[in-house]
Length: 301
Image 1 (cartoon, rainbow, N blue to C red):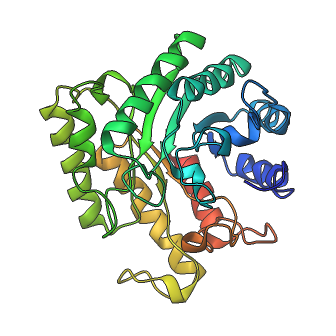
Image 2 (cartoon, rainbow, N blue to C red):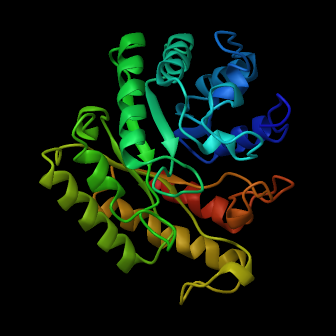
């Protein structure tokens, strides 16, 4: 997890996001960063960030997840220990409870990231269903009005578990429909694939009796690097990224997504697959996509 610091670019980038009319900000608050030892909590790393978001009128969506070394089921020495299920699920629940209790004004909490990808979740669907149930109960115990998002599913790519959503919804012991208020998935695809994914999500939720849940897309985006621009009609650099944004964000809303989040705010190599997806470059200079986003937000009720 590295040093206990937040990227110094984050505060000025958040200010620029607010100037563009952004209404929400999604970020991860990993367990190891706020609970480096069991029952030893320190939220100081995030206090200023949450306060800044609130002062700017932004709604935080905080992602909770990733297993600390002291509670991981990973084999000894495995560098990816944060992706394994916990040894003690109740310890994960206490981290969730303390996080929600510490930030009583934060109303939306996402549990894990892309658990249908083995690169983010080294457990089974049943183990995620259990984790989600424990987290849901902890959130509601700390703040009954808070809302829980399913960890954003990738629902794409050759390495994902294609049956993950059905498996967790149909889990015999911890049916996931009891443990989230908002359905959530990620998409970086063409409009045709977005349509197929939304149809799949809607039909699957309906089949398991939770078709009334709102659906959010908490990650979508496109690169400004010509080398990464594979979608026909959206090639040529930063301008193509802006056009993609102008066309695809409204399209997801038309498909029925209640909220759509762009990933990400600024460029950086910490996410190699999305290094150039930012609305800002690495020096926090706005790209054409930033202005396209600003204009789109201003025209959207």
